[in-house]
Every structure is written in C-alpha cells, then in structure tokens.
Image (cartoon, rainbow, N blue to C red; front, side, top):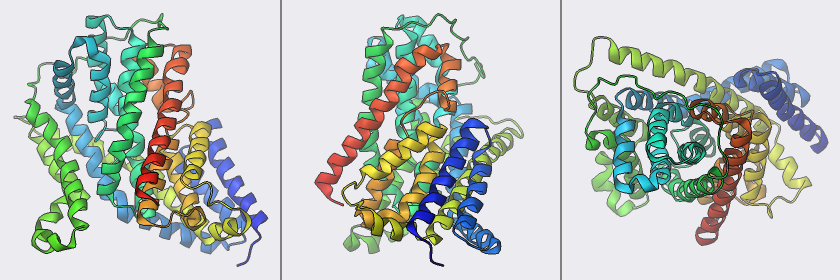
Length: 444
C-alpha cells in the first residue's frame, strides 16, 4: 500500500475533525466517534474493509491486555475509598496541619492526594461537602476554595496512572509506570501550586450569586477510619510501584530482590491498595462489598471501551505509516516535546475530554517519535507527560468536569471561565515548562 503524504494527511485531519464534531457537537460517546474515525481513515487510505476490521481488533486487544486490570482495580480502589469516607479523613488531617488560614492550600493538597487513585470528577463530588462546610467555617470565598480543590485533583488526573489517559499513553508508548509516577509527581506538584495560586489571586475578585449546595451528609453515622488506615491505600501502591521501578534499573541488586519486586507490579500493587482500602471499614454489611465492586466494574467498563477504541484508532494510523510520511515532508525534530503538548491541547480544547485527547494524541504521536527525536526511553516518558500537560488546557464549557465543579460549588459560568478555565491554562503552561526543564537536565 503506497499513499501520498497529502492523502494520509487529509485522512488524518478528517478523522480528527470527525472525533471532535461527533463528541463536542453531537454528544456522541467517544467510543463510537473513534470507531467511525477508524473506518474513515482506513478506507481513506484504501485499506479493504476486512483489513480495517482486523487491524481494529488487534489494536483494541493489545491495549486491553496492557490496561484492563489496572483500570478496573484502580477504579475499585477509588470507589471503596469514597464509600469508607477515607477521603474525608485525609482532608481533615491535611487541614489540621495547615490550619484554617491556609484552607485553600489544604484543599489543593487534599485534591492532589485524593486524586492519585480517584478520578477528578468523582473526587470533586465526594469532597464537595467537606469543601462547602470549610468555606462556611472560614468565610473564604467559594471560588477560592472550589478551584483550589478542583485544580489539585486535576493536576494528577491528567499526568499520572492509573488515570486512563496517562495509563493508555504509557501502555502505547511502552513507558514504565514507576518512572512515570515519580517524574509525573515532580510535574504535577508545581501544576497544583499554580492552580492554587491562581484560585487565591483571581477567586477573591469574583463572587458567585448562587446559593451554595447543601453539604453531603451521606453515611454520616458511619465510623471513620484512622488517619493511617485512610492514607495506606493511597501511599502503599505508589511506593511499591516506585521501588520496583528503581531496583529494575539496578541489575546488581536485582537477583536478591526479584521475588519481592513482584509486589511492585502495578496490578499487584493496586490490588494491595484495594485490600487496604477494605480494611478502612470494620464491619461490612452483607452484599455491600459486592455492590461496590459491581459499581466499580461498570464505571471502569465505560472507560475501557474508550481506551480500546483509541487503541484501534492508533493501530489504523500505524498502518498508514504516517510517521514516515511526516518525517519526509516536515522537519519535526525542532518541536521535540512541544509537539505532543500542542496537539493534545488542541484536541482537549476542541472536544473537552482529557482522556480522549491523550488517547487520540498518543495514537498520532507514536509513529512520529523518530521524527521528533523522542525514541529513547526517556523521550517516550517525557512525551507522555507532555501530552498530559496538553490535556489540561483548555477546560471550559465542553468539559464534563467543568460542570461538575460549577454544580457542586454553585459557581456561575462567568466565574468558572475567569477562575477555573484560566487556571487550567496556567497549569498546562507550568507543566510543559517543568517537563522542558527536566528534559534539559536528563536529555531525551
């Protein structure tokens, strides 16, 4: 199969535009948008229909093999932490350390920690009651408190596994999860601080006229876990994965430690976190755990079909040899890590979903890595982080998370755009600058 650069480029643009239009304009689920885009691109480069289907099956299966268990177990961990109110214990502990005067920082740190295993939208819903109560207690304007929490959650959601966008990109580009988590934390922390700074700076200048929603009081009679029990399910998996990644790069120490390193395998580490989360509640009612795990499986299923469709789309793009065509027609090496950032930012701004933006961008970027000079292990790692930074901006009215924040904090559209949307831009810029700084130190 030989196609011209123009033909491949037009098919790629058509596929991307189709994804954006179907998801943003017509609210078609991302799975079906990606599914249709596979046929548009595949048939556009003159692949037989049977070949398109087989390639899609292979791409879907390969990404599922890498990610399915991680996403399901990670989602279950988040659901259990929400139900046992461990998230509230974490928030209370951080607030005690910072004091009421620094309540916005406490909310940012809480979002950062709680957001490690929990998706940002779920995390915000769960923590909104705590945030609203604290706002009334301290008198700090709601835009400051709400956006501090929201940006703390957002910083890790876009950059770190087991969140689906980062996890899918890491699987596709074959990036080690442990290294991604360690380096991603270095990037996410300044992003969180930037979001907190903007929330305090701009949030005090605007006021919402809407009534604050009532506090969440669900399971108020339930006994809270201890601080140690609440933190362990979050901290232990991260430490296990990070330790495994560190010792895998130390061959002299590997032989003696190899049996123990299995604990740092992401699936095992998250499973340990899940068991620790179950320990956060002393007495479980009959069928209670089963219902929660069923809820987690159903929630994860919706995420996995999107990731699988993204893998299918990536497989179609790989067959078009788009990387070879681009490398011959355009000099991309000068763009480096900024190209994945810009591409993902455009996709995110256009269609709203950070996850879809990263998955789509990673499929496009993978064959372009040689042209970008990012074929090394470190280059692939920085590429994933660059796409994560791009997926932060710009969060606005087409982003579901935007409306979750507005609904549960009572903020008006104008306030959200001034405070949260601008915060997402600042966070994305700070993140890519931090990634560029890391690239200068470590090299590609």
